[in-house]
Image (tube, rainbow, N blue to C red; front, side, top):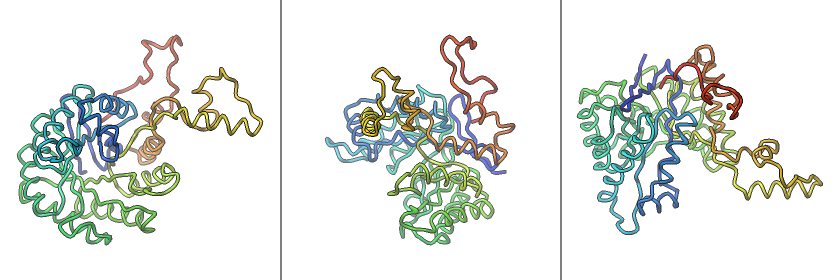
Length: 352
């Protein structure tokens, strides 16, 4: 069985065919998050800290760290990203004990990250582009780390799954030339949006099977790509992830948390109920109201995709006796209920 080992200073995560699905938390990434980008340029890491803790609490087994901020004061990422990557990695590994994934398109930032990250991080990423292969693969060998291999090359991203398979095969073969084993290559076969390509789901399922059976590699993806531009994205993601797991996918870069319901949504719901003749008491607990009205929660919590993944782990027999499923669905202990030490988890320590 192919197993990709990722380590922090104190903890190991295993990506493997016979392992629970590995969730790589994606939220520490300023791309498309203007507020976070502005905070990072200003030296404010409070959101990074919150996102790190929240993702681990929601069940992420690895955290992806991306420092791709284009500073207004200096638009050259080759100068700004390496020191920012160092700072973010040092901060996060001081807060949580899960392994980290160093995510950058800037070569110097990748190497700076490798210098400061404890354990055995995952490197994200290498592609089939010649320049990228020639820089990243020697780093992978030098630091003895696993790497995400993205199935595009100098010609771009092909819509033909056979072409994407051949790019992945090329990367695995080139890695072997450097003495890098296939079990240290985690292939991203590239998930296309189902809204733009009706066969996107079928394509990636078939590709994952081929990558597993013919190349013997683990796989990952940007899970939310499948639902891009569509309504009820969580509904599509919740179906896609278990289907991908069944096809053999072993990890995903994704958001493991559900954000709190904003007050604007709560007030909007109350007004809608009032218009229907239903008056909500002014002193009603907001958390209870959100749950009863189907809005969600006022608290940051594990997202619905995490529920789908844990169910799939159980059904694939990668959660022996359903222990993780039971723990996930156990109501949290209430203060003063007599539980020992206020613990809510109990049981054995979870793998990865």
